[in-house]
Length: 287
Image (cartoon, rainbow, N blue to C red; front, side, top):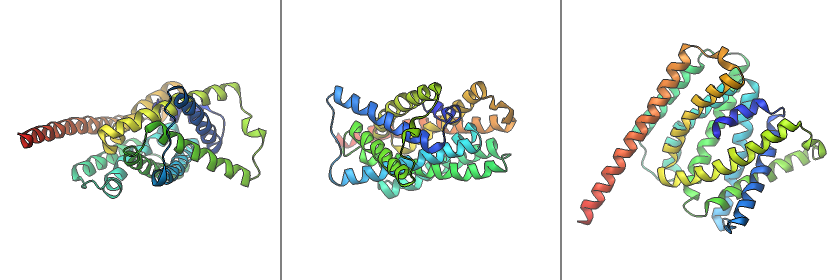
């Protein structure tokens, strides 16, 4: 689902703010319907609610910078910047989650950066600005990922997602009001844009949101964000087919893609072994 998000940033003929605004309200509405039908209408309370609102603002900023980066350059570059999220997670998790700093995870994050270098080292001009915006998007993604890993331990996943999506929608709506842009022109779009936005909001957002937060509970923010680094690979493959971006790809791209894929596989194997060791140690301690 996430592989399409970057592609849709090019296919939808709206600016970044409008894409994000429509994505937020469609996703929030779809999630609210799901919660009502499944009778899981439980929202965060107290401090958890406050933190969920703050994370919702970060989510909106993440998507705005993400689509801005894509519209300034290519879907390939915008999505590659997100690979740096893993590096941010390595220092954010000790601060937010209280986890011990892992040099192995930090090293894997650096290898991902090296992979990005091989893929994008020949970009220049306007793409450099897009690169900076894309890296800011990755920082926001890291904050969102780690924060949700903690918040998901304190509240139900659907309610957390609905709060964050609704917060982003309300914040952007206030922005449009302040700019005098709150009118029916916000809904002016082609039929293809409308259907792409439905796909983006329901499947690529609501469904992906719920699945990801649940996965973070089980695997941790680093494993999830590192696994998501497969996203640049299949997003760029989709961009080759749908957007004809293959003209930008050289041999160095394939070296970078291979490096990112290797790190993802190595992380999975390492985490699996660590889990088996922890289970064995727990069993011995009980005996």
